Length: 579
Image (cartoon, rainbow, N blue to C red):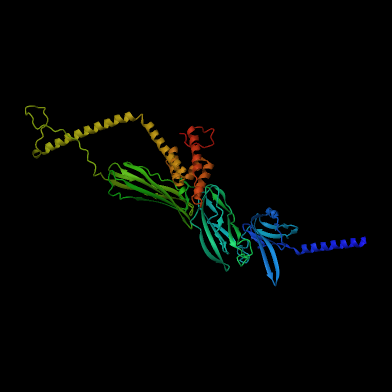
């Protein structure tokens, strides 16, 4: 009786084992990709599917060796055909390759199930973006106007984001950040449609102006575009899906630019590489009728195609003899076009003549480098000569002559001359009166000259100290304006005040730009802060990027270090040159 019982128990265990094995055989866990050949900067989707009802999730850690996991989503779907129901669960993983070559998606575990391995070919080119059947729903094309430029010459970067699916409004593009370069976006993002290989694409186009500040190799990094599109696998708006859309990501390729230094043949005071540079001037009123004491404003405009306003120098107009000059308003502006940025700087000066006569304004010249012909050019405003007329509102200075007595004794030999009535004057008497008036006027002029000479000797010892005091006051005033603008986060005003303060502090008479000051000070931290502030002027978050406080704190350290004279222990370069 014992032996039949044991035999029955063994048969029961065998049946149970066969049932379990059959259930495992029926359960499936598969892997598939939407594309097997992609470019390094593109993304693709890995779909893991099982028909087993499980609450577990697949282990994706093994993917991180060769891929970046950009997003995952899960779908649960049910289908009923002829009364028979089928259900499955999908995990959709968006992947981006970390390198080129043949990459293998390894087996992914789920409970006691494992998916099959899949090979993916990653190339450094454009992948299959031209093959519309297998193309990514979103991809990026980028180009530059030149792959070899001079330092500070403009590079125009064009990004075109192609999409053949409808995208939601959560579109994002990583910011373009490049060390030692000035960057600004050219205008707004353009949107249009185009047809390629019979397929209609929507295109979002952006242009950037890049000015490298150092020679060498400049790397334009890869930018990542991300968004959400409707799930194209669900024609019913993902009614049985847990989400209504899926993420899409595209990356632009890296671009390397060769930046050449300033050529040795260029002899200009300032390095200004541009496609075109012009100098023009205008006057608030005509100079044909200008008189002593009249005020007239001269406005000079420098405009450069291919340079931003921050790269343009200030214009120091020399003061002619007989003219008082007073600086007026200064403005800067950048205008974007499809071919690049056109920067302009406007400076106005009030001129007031102090004496009549002929006045000659010297020419204004700026040497610049033509990047189209690779040659030095000179923009010039010719000299201007005009005549200042006497003012009609000023009374002429007339020497007074004492009245001579009309009564005289004819018996005295040394008596003063008698002035007869005007109607009885003859020509000899008139000549004598003119001689007397001339002598008296000459004596008055000699007396005035002697007085001015004595006053000049008296003030000579005090003059240098007074000039130094006025210079310090002007420098302190300029630095106070810079400090006030930084605290208000007004970058435009702070830039102008900083340049003015630096010119006063170093007694510089030549034009200078903000980037040149950073180079002269040899302070990389200052250059980095200034570049960030320049780039922040065109950022969507200008309130965050316009923080001028770090700039102010660093300049205070530079000013304090140089004023204390402790150049040996300071890492900052001297601001005030030794004579």
